[in-house]
Image (tube, rainbow, N blue to C red; front, side, top):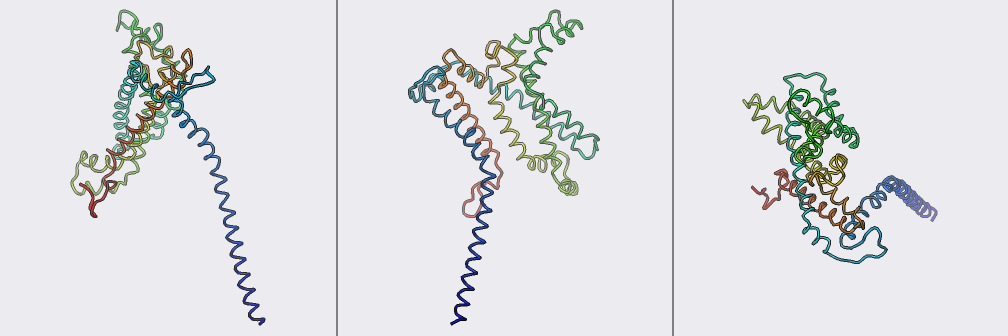
Length: 328
């Protein structure tokens, strides 16, 4: 009888200890939720709520000065697509981004290949990376003020080209649409090509040298190694650069806004999506609903294009499998 009681007490004690250990482990697991909680709360308040609120406001006629509002459903979108200013803003945004991104990728690619070429053995690569990245660290307001001063009618650029005899009269860069568009494109390229160069250089230096050595043994040339080794292995980084540049380009605001009167002048030549949204928000009535509609359309447009990029440039091993074989 005493032996039975001893076994019973022993098993009960083991069960109690096991339960205590599980409770202690569960208690420690809660600490993880405490560390994650600030991020989740911040995301819900400053990330998810503004997006959902923007979607809701885009279907209303709410203004800054009105206490009440009505649900207008798709009226804001109908007025938006009938507005020539909106079409101009969308066209300008795409043109300015493409004119900036294409040379940005091209020059960044050439610089990356040049500085990562092992045969050249270039010294001070880290210093060059710092120099390339420095424009990205400057505030947009400072850059806009700098270029506005340089290219103003009586600025240093006009003084130089007039005194040197390149032109008879000073060029009004700020008020001529073609020059202003070129200036915005150049500033955007100058600000961001350094970051693109650094990302591509990092991707290229991460490629194992043994792959190139094996290709040389097999008789592959420089072009073949670039097309069949370098490009496929840096493809994920290129997709990342393309998508992030697209998202930033669709939100282009600070440089076009600060260089002019804040309305996309001259002649709406640098009017972008975000400037158009800002103008609707700060109109005479402060039409929040119309501004939210612009923001929602830009968001959907950017998301669709980004998904298309991922779909068209996805890796072959990501394609669906049928009957045990990959689709060809």
